[in-house]
Image 1 (cartoon, rainbow, N blue to C red):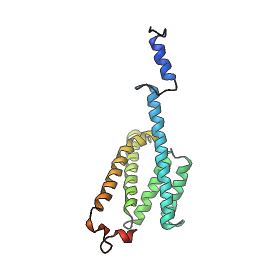
Image 2: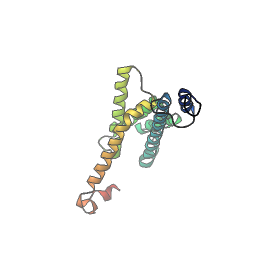
Image 3: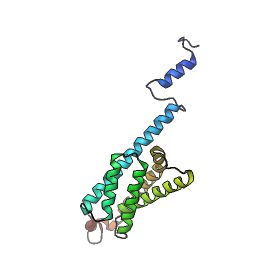
Image 4: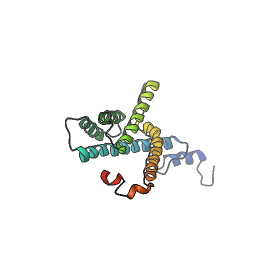
Amino acid sequence: MSGTGIARGHRDRDRTLSSGPPLPGTAGEARVRELSSRWLFGLFSTLLAVSLILHQLWWDGLETDSLHAVVVLAALWLLVRPTSVVRFAMMLAAEVVAVVGDLPYVGDHTLVVFVSGLAVLFLLGWTLLRSRRLPAAGELYDTIAPFLRVQLIIVYAAAALSKLNTDFLDPQTSCAGPMS
């Protein structure tokens, strides 16, 4: 008993059931982490789907006779339920196939999505072979997030490094003008 007249076990139990943050190492903390990862996966898949749709509309308009139309349809389907791993995989597969059809005439940003998509699809295939099930949305996010963070750092570092070239700002020799 403590000075409050409440037994230690009851106080700890009440604290874990309260609306405050869960205690470290409890089932409540694991559930919060799981829901947070699932929400972050939904946010990531939503942003990726919207970016693929906007990219298609910006560069090529609304094409109905190309593989990019399949990407747009898959992205719209994913937006209906952004935490669906199956829909996310189908959108990535459609994008990978569309990029393969466009090679070698694709931009760097498209290649980044292509490599990321291939890596995630490989991971999903490997997980399916090993455990006979697809990972949950939160599990998938927890697995791919470190890879995507490192990839983001590499992309920004490469972009910064390419601009260290002294001729980057020279309109006679730089590719920056024609590419903009």
